[in-house]
Image (cartoon, rainbow, N blue to C red; front, top):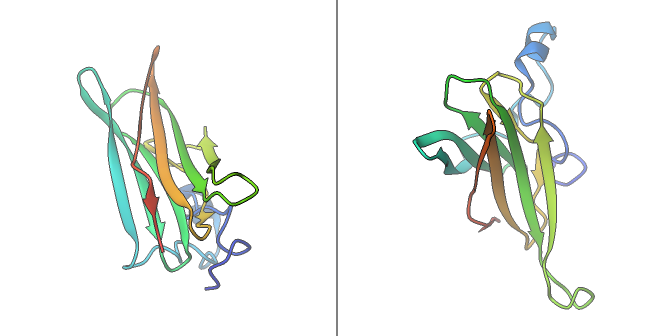
Length: 151
């Protein structure tokens, strides 16, 4: 484990099931960052009748990384969106204003019921949130977790 942007950024937190089936032997890095230190923070995605999904922000201290995970809880086909929003701290060049960086996974539905982003390394001092959406028929329903500061 070497928690830095080069090793803990832009890869899937867990290999898709079809890749796991085809792989011969252990997949390097498969869920290596997800351990007993990991924490998750969740928000419900609701339509006018109740909860239809969840958006979860996972914080992985071992790799100093986060990822977002959207789940579909209804028995209808639905498109999903999962994204990580990183608010970088301001500095004298940005007049102390925060800049947002968004990592989005769209249409990469690996299980039929869930969608996750790649790992995003937590920049020092950054605040992080997760936003997700479930699109059913003509309706789109979304939610975001609060922003968190990790580290």
